[in-house]
Image 1 (cartoon, one colour):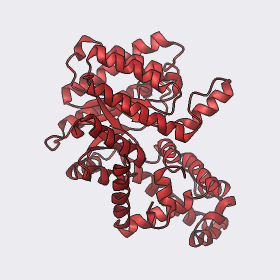
Image 2: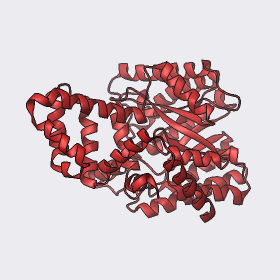
Image 3: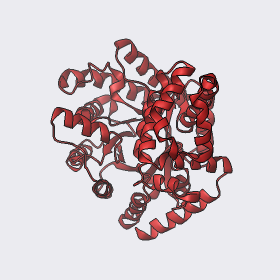
Length: 426
């Protein structure tokens, strides 16, 4: 692993140094904002509430309320400019600048799904450079039957559009779906297990059917721990239907930050072994850590997530090894290493070599707008890399953005460390 790790660090550092100056400037600004824990938290809270702010005055006042007490941590030019925000006559100007910055921030990580031409351009650009893509349709919580129907139709429309769009030879078409978006929030209920599972199975089957007709692979996202087992049950029930006996590929997520992740993975691998359904397992650390801890504490439940990052890292690599060894033994499972941590990536590369597995039969995944240097290094080493591209209305997608930034800008993470070091080197 050490050999791969050092090689990747060198490649990433070189790519960081050779970036265009606008990217360096943006990352320096992000680094300054994220370097302080309190400022980072307040900025992300402001971004989360931003979509609900409609007037210049409300935008400026909320910004000052959230961020004002921590303005001393900003770079000096921004700190000086913030003086304007306290002047009532300057609110229109200040709010325009804030709106521009927030939109710039959002569009770095989210592609506007209302602009199919833009989505096509992004897709073609990434594929022309050798990257596979998974499109992730964003949206808020579904509260009504009408909203659920709209969301299902959006998935179907995206599948049809992708199916009609040309892709380079050897490339695939992929989307990622959240099963919770197919029914109202009140119906997505682990307590009312059987009724929910039966209903969502029919809706998920509709998406899989459309995927098969349009040669689009459908991957299921994993959400909160409370519905993890329900999600897996729906996944299994749907794939066991006779009409999907010849499906070529389908995907599911495993979250390694859960204490019982290994036990859950073992059950999933047993099912894949018995059913012979070809499944791609997307292994992630997890993006709901704060939510899981707070919810468990409020309900006085055992906390389901691992408390220490090092233990999560260790479990991620343990599960990666388990999946790849299952593949070596003949189980129809592909592995997607969805981590921005170079140690995880280096470990997985080493495993693939040690087990003699095909590099192109497994893949590494990074988030759109993050880990650009990592994806270049992985591709340069001859491995398959997939970009996970969120698409939706950029401002409305802020909840996703905040969750991903909280997950990936931790000072313990590789990306956070790179942002925080002068020049972007690690």
